[in-house]
Image (tube, rainbow, N blue to C red):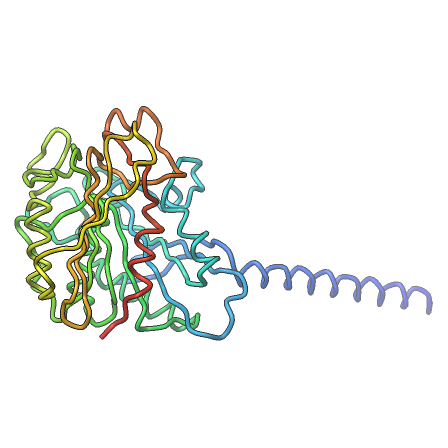
Length: 330
């Protein structure tokens, strides 16, 4: 009888230890790495992926949002779908530099795929969600769960996400320290007002972008009035120079031509000395198409057939992070 009792106690103890081991493993997985989560905003469950670097520690760290283009899912951004993705390189940077990266997902638009409700007043294919409230709620949630430096919250986005980054830079002006807008310009028919406070912005646009015209006009390939219209990249830069009161004469840097077959060189124009040390920066990607430049994550020939050349002379994430990491909220 006693032996039976000891056996039962042994099994119970073993089961408890197994549960404890499983719990510990789960906790370790939650402490760092890439996770997909949900948050309910305005009564709607919204998806986002978050990357937590190892050994985060108690010190406050920056928070970077990377916004997808129209029709792109967060698994495409993080590389989980198996496609090439310059955006997944944020996670390597986060690991090395110790910051948190979030990949939020928009709601479905007219074509049944994720979109952002950006500042284009004449665009009719995006969802009508309150995405400003979504990102604001995400900021609040992540700040409540992790040690975030509230003066170092940044937003980068490409295409539809690049337009949305500008909307956030204007309408969440009290929370976001700097923005980056890739393959996007300022809307010709804007819904957004002028920013309440100066904010630094980086543009990275290809001169041969066949979806978002570098010289302004109707968006789309072929141009589709339902997608809205944009100012030229030059006019967009002028607008933000006016907002921030920066220098009107830039300093210029030309990057080495690492890949002579990618369409052309990259030129960097920096308009500095704005109010509160703000800057407006343009990466002019000569010959570049509708994509984020990348040295490591190179899109396919078929991709370039539709979106034109991807530049391979710079790494978008590295350039944007070098811009972000010097900026603070004022």
